[in-house]
Amino acid sequence: MTDKSDTRRVSGKPRVIVTRRLLPDTEARMGDLFDVTLNEQDKPMSRAELIDAVRSCDVLVPTVTDTIDRDLIDAAGERLGLIANFGAGVDHIDLAAARQRRIMVTNTPGVFTEDTADMTMALIISTTRRFSEGFRAVQEGRWSGWSPSAYLGHRIGGKLLGIVGMGRIGQAVAHRARAFGLRIVYHNRHPLPEAVENMLAARFEPDLDKLVAEADILSLNCPATPETHHILDARRIALMKQGAYLVNAGRGELVDEKALIAALAEGRLGGAGLDVYENEPDVPAALLKLPNVIAMPHLGSATEEGRGAAGEKIIANIRFWADGHRPPDQVLDTLI
Image (cartoon, rainbow, N blue to C red):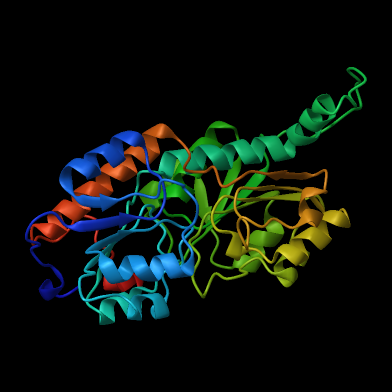
C-alpha cells in the first residue's frame, strides 16, 4: 500500500481542476467545498491545458479522455498531490510515475458495474437479433413491410457466452445472461470461488484460445493493460466460430480493429456490438459501413445514477485526502 507520507493535510480549500463537465449537483457541491475550476466547454483538454492544470492545482480530476502519462506527471508542480479519477479504469494514468512523485491516485470503483453490464447485455441482444439493421432500414425508408425471411437473427437461449474478464462487470453480465438462458464460460487470471461459479452457473476456462473458439458470443469485459492489448488479435479472431458474435464494452484497445473489420467484411463473423474503440473518438469509416455492426458512443456508464455516484466518490476521496486521511478509493500498488 502507498506509504502514509503520501497523505497530507491541505490548509484552506484545496485547488481542484476538473477536466470535463460533471453532473450539476456534483459541480455545485465541489464549488461549495473546494477552490474548483470546471471545464465549462466540456471539450477534452489539450496537452498544454493539462500541463498548466497539473502545475497549478492540488487535485486533478481527470476522465478516460485524458492521458496522464509520465511526461505529464513529471511536469506537475509541487502542489499536485492527488489525481482523483472519474471512473474505475486507470489505464490512462501512469501509476508508477505517480507513485514516484508521491502523487496519490483514486478512482470510483463499483458505481458503473450495473450500467455497463446492462449495456453489454443490450449489445448481445441487439447484435444477434440484427436490431441495428432493422432500425436503419426503417429510419432510411427502406423497409417494405413484414416478411417471414427478413432480418433473421438468432435466438440467444442455449447459446454459449464466453466472458473474458470476470470481475465485477463480468459477473454482472453473467448474472443477466443466465436469465436469458445463455450458457456461460469465462476466462480470468484466476477462477472464481466455487460458490460464485455455482451461483452464476459459469464454467472457468483457463485456455483463452479454447474459449474464443468455443463461444457463440464473445464478451470482452477486462481492463486495458499491456498484457490485454489486442487480446483479440487477428490470430484469435480467426479462431472464432463461423458466424460468432463479438461484444466489447470494455476497452477499445482489447481488439485489433483492422482484423475485426476484415473478419466482419468477409462474413466470417455474424456481427459485432461495440461501445468502445481503439482511437476514440475516431471510429474507422470501414467499421461504420458494415451492416452487421452496432456502434455506440461509449455509453456504458451513461446513467444519471452512476455518474452521480461517481461524483460523490470523487468528493469523498478529495475530502479524505485534504484532511490528511487515506481516501477510501485509493488505487493500490498492486495495480501498478
